[in-house]
Amino acid sequence: MVRTAAAPEIVVFDPMVYDIMRETATELGGEYVWISRHADTEAERDAAKAADVALWQDVNSVRGSDLATIKAKTDEYRSRLSRLRELAG
Image (cartoon, rainbow, N blue to C red):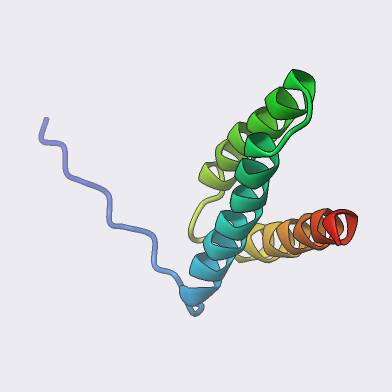
């Protein structure tokens, strides 16, 4: 029996929306890194590091062809980023 590779899934939307999600996550991750480096306590530092790890696990679980999830995650990351910046401000 001969096995052939499956054809890649065709994305029918602008793939830049995926890049926007990842760039938003990069900004959010940067905030977590800043918080971890400027934390007053070890618990705060550990929480920020854990949040950054969880963020990237979440980001990497999103399929590049799942437009609905990409948009939802972009909105979620923007919201989290705004909240962190409000707290810092």
